[in-house]
Length: 111
Length: 115
Image (cartoon, rainbow over all chains, first blue to last red; front, side, top):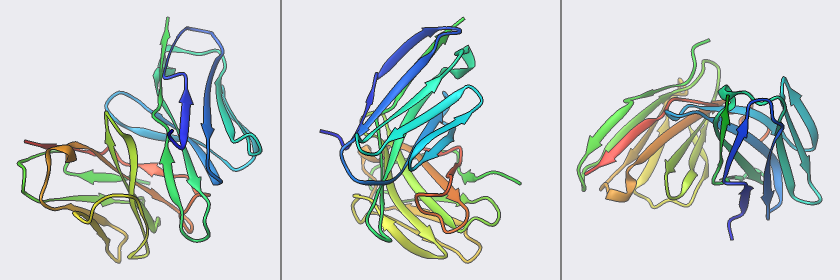
């Protein structure tokens, strides 16, 4: 079992729909990141979370440390949101840490 | 500020050769991390350098090595290339003390093909 599991693997939505991508992890973490990767490879960091909830424009990220679960929500989705969304966790461990990635969720938003 | 740059962008090598990839971080950033991305394994952490010292390392064989210079630029070297080393290699820089609480800024990647 992977340390970081994302669901769904693929998601197709119509423009304007509310999107939810889930990330579950099995290890203790210091922080969790949500990344966006567009075709061609460029990766952009969307959020860094260690607790609670963050919002940036139409994107909202939440984390529940007790349940080891995070969600990324996109409100009023748009075709330009089409990308792979990747969850990454930093495993805690003093000054040494390890970054583990989920396999990603491919989101396609149709006009 | 200029973003993270990586050179070269594309590279073709044959098995057994070695390769060196370069990463220039955002000015002022002292932490540089390297990642490998393949269709099968996804993104995997290779190592992180901070102020010229390797601070963390992922589960990769010793053929993968790196270094960081005093200007924070970093190089990654892969020796005795194998077909399975074909991948997109990404570097990311972060400010402050690096680590898990700082945003990572990714470069465009180097696409390595091993024939």
